[in-house]
Length: 265
Image 1 (tube, rainbow, N blue to C red):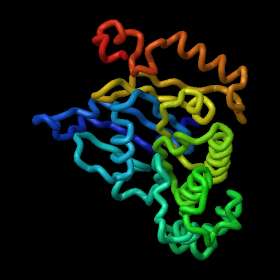
Image 2: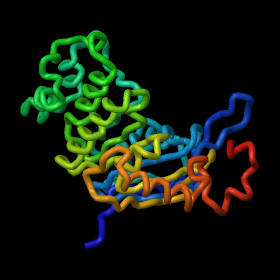
Image 3: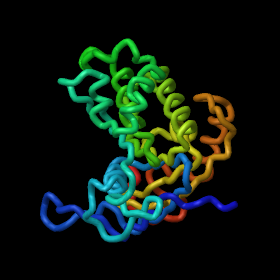
């Protein structure tokens, strides 16, 4: 049976006013689809429009040319999604539990999902604690619980584990994968870290320098669970870089020869 498309992205153009006047084109000709339940990673250099893309998918940004559908609906009409940002964005005047419950829908409240998620993430003893009393990793766990509390059909994550120590980041990655498997969530995960993308993803979309578009769509056929820095993961990553030496600069082999050198730095 063919995979059922859950997310369809066809963005002809997304522009912003430029500081020096005129317009800056952030995205152009960006087209891809994601089947239900797939974990898709988006990789590309800074300034490729990855966060802009997530804001469009979430419905926060509606000023673009093109179309986005989520399970057949526009982002504004789709069921509420989970969105986890680079920073935890916990409200400092609320306790950890209050930070989760403030976004919980009626079903989540009736089922005490906030409490259950916090227990699952070893934060049961910190429910009445204020965020400034938590470590960075604990704050990220709380933010992950908040993103999942309503069991959203799709989860958007914008480099959520950046700047964390490797053991802490690895633990959160495993927590994320466990939650995704339990709820069959469709995931779009932005990262600069190719190892992280290989560890987490079913597929990696590599984006070009602005205006951003997909230059390589790479499936990942490694068995799960995947151990960070395992021989299998490193072999996959090394072969990918060998076959496409310019992808981390947002270039495929064909266009690397024609893009000005200053854009490849």
